[in-house]
Length: 317
Ligand SMILES: Cc1cc2nc3c(=O)[nH]c(=O)nc-3n(C[C@H](O)[C@H](O)[C@H](O)COP(=O)(O)OP(=O)(O)OC[C@H]3O[C@@H](n4cnc5c(N)ncnc54)[C@H](O)[C@@H]3O)c2cc1C
Image (tube, rainbow, N blue to C red; front, side):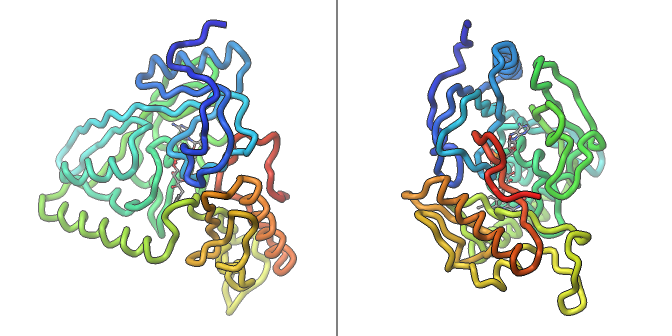
């Protein structure tokens, strides 16, 4: 088998995810161009090698045994803009971080994305999960994207409807495609409005730092429940926030196993430490699931994605 020069072997993933745990990737590539990305995909498909697209690893838990496949971390970070009378269309490569995208947009008097300030991740990973903060979802801004087929490396451009965006859901969860770039429609503004938006970005980060852990975590570990899943009312309404139930059970800042624990700041966030293993994190996560299930009959499902496991390591329905 002829291995493309940008594919390397046995690369540690512990420094490529926000829990800082997990083993190595058997194969690893950081393509800088569409051609390299396509080449890596075709090589993996031809040789029957499983594939995983990794961004910043801010929402990914890597198995302690690593991944016997090819990890592709798209390095394409090109950003371009087009404008009409009221709108600035910003197109960013999948490897661009959300922070880079926000800063670029503000510098070009284009606002909207600053609502996602402080969320670590790449454009690719953030479109995949449809990142959200309070009422803002990234789907609100996306107009189209370039995607690549993960068997044959062919490219196509799709519009927002193709993604079928939902809460923690896009078509990318079920179809063999990865994001190469995405275009966001932002409000054109004056330099003064942009400065206000930069201030709001700063305020959001300050607020987040106060409320959430900002390192050694993947953010919210579990998804919130659907309203239909919650069969009972609490104080006259259905509470869908999984953190509410975990908090009620007193797990915040108390439950721990090995080097992993439930954050002292937020009941739905697991934090690791330099001594943590992925197995520790899974033990904590399963204990959280079991506690909520036994007390309320609701089984939290993970928002965090898994890499290198034969099957979902959590309890599932
Ligand atoms: C401190 C902290 C706070 C957070 N706060 C929030 C928050 O407020 N709101 C929120 O929504 N999330 C939050 N998260 C979760 C995380 O930031 C987002 O899910 C983010 O989008 C992850 O991006 P990533 O590039 O790191 O994705 P990764 O973790 O690398 O990957 C996540 C998923 O995306 C897929 N993926 C990656 N790149 C591509 C691509 N190019 N094409 C197709 N699929 C791809 C991966 O295969 C994987 O399934 C937080 C995480 C942390 C660590």
